[in-house]
Length: 120
Image (cartoon, rainbow, N blue to C red; front, side, top):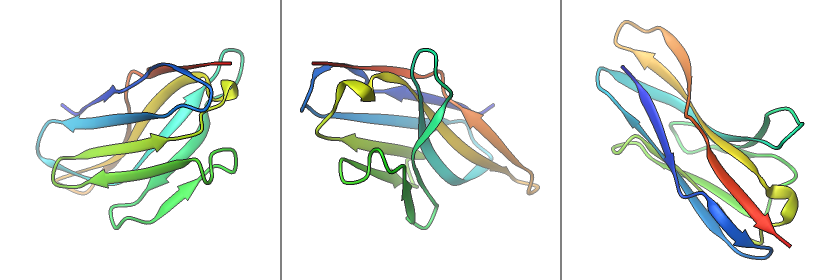
């Protein structure tokens, strides 16, 4: 059974930084793309950033230049470093992973979410 466990959220003042981590547990699978999404109250879930197994990255325009996504394939972990945080970054942040089973089926898994709150 695959689980994604996020950590690193919290309360930070505007201009501050946070680093979120997400580790995939379980065995018998590999991971293609991993990423972070967020959902603010009353809004739809939106992309923050994604990273492929090979390290290619993609960022939402709203976080470009302020966020850096990275991954450790051996540890099955994805990170996002968020700098110059703004109150509008306040949201529940979800980890996402495209899991590939040993027989080649691909599934999307989500973590439970970690809260990021940025005070002005």
